[in-house]
Length: 107
Image (cartoon, rainbow, N blue to C red):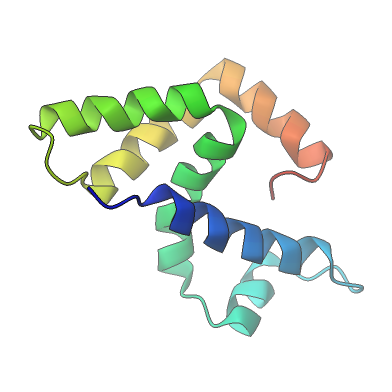
């Protein structure tokens, strides 16, 4: 089973570094354009990367649930992103996300 999350986290960190390290406060859209990364790709991988960075245990549970539902075959990226997005919408995760954003860990 190929691991999706390292590529998601790597892409997310590349964009985050471009946004945060800019001397003239680059917007997310501008950073994506400068890095030649399609917005759709970033938006699809963003919830996976954010959940992985915020709470690896919750991420692993979501990943394992999807793997079990598919019979141990490949993990459907769309389903994983949807489940990660649903988890990130919970109030406790929104608090974690806000703290991470203020510390520069997330964008």
